[in-house]
Structure formats: C-alpha cells, structure tokens
Length: 185
Image (tube, rainbow, N blue to C red):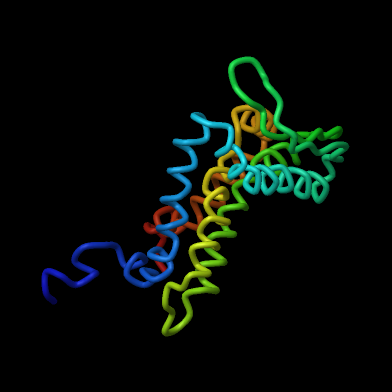
C-alpha cells in the first residue's frame, strides 16, 4: 500500500463513495455562498425558497403521517423580531409520541442530495453542464435540513422516546456483545 492510497488518507466509507461525495461538493460550496450572501442582499433570499419549501413540507407530511394534524402551511417570509421566519407549519395535535418525528422531519431532507448524487454518479459518470443546474437546485437543501430552535423545543415533548431510541442505538452499535461477553456458551 502506498502513502497515496485512499485507505491511507481517509476512512473506508469515503473511499467507497468518493464519486458521490465529489459530486456533492459543488452544491455544498454553493450552499455556503448562498448562506453568506443571503443576509447581505434580498436577491439571494430567493435561493433559500426551495429549501424552505422542502423544510416545511417535511414538517407537514410527517406531521400528517404521525397524527399531529397539520392545519396550515406557509412559506411566505415574515419578520420575527431581529430575524426572518421563512416558513411555518401549524400542527394542532402534537403529543409526546409525534412531537419529535414531526419537529425533526427536516433531517429527511438530507437524503435528497445524496439520492440525486447516487443517481448521477453511475459507472463512467462525468460532470456535465446540467450538473451545475442540479447543484444550484440542491444547494438550498443543505441549508434547510437542520431543524430550527422552535423545532427542537417542540421535539423535547417526545422525551419518553429517548430511552427506547438510546437502547436501540446501543444495540445497533454492538452493545449486546459487551453485555453478554462474560456469558459462556
């Protein structure tokens, strides 16, 4: 193995999916540019609309699927104190079991850029002119997948779900092996 092998420089998952990650770099870079410029001029605000629509639709659909009863959806920006509220969804039946899924639904948005990258980076792929337009369309998704502060406050209502989720995560990460390592067969 030479010093320049991928495995010597990066984790195996990066080496296996290098094409996919390389494909996502322009959209992630554009997201950083949009983020930096959105506060300086209203024109760049337009580039955040696609991400806002996806963010609010994620709340709406997961809220509907989990019984949180969404009653309204807005993607019209409005001033809220010192900042702008880009959109909102009103859920009329938020309970302990559906608060976290509905509030943290924007995390699902991050799958969109990865799905597009997987689709576009088949065997023998080349970056084409159309990929620049796709990168511009994907960039707002990088900015919209993180739940807002209000979303995190709503998600806290689901604290009873933390224990079973933590246990499932522990088991998925191999916790059962350490628990039963002293049991002889």
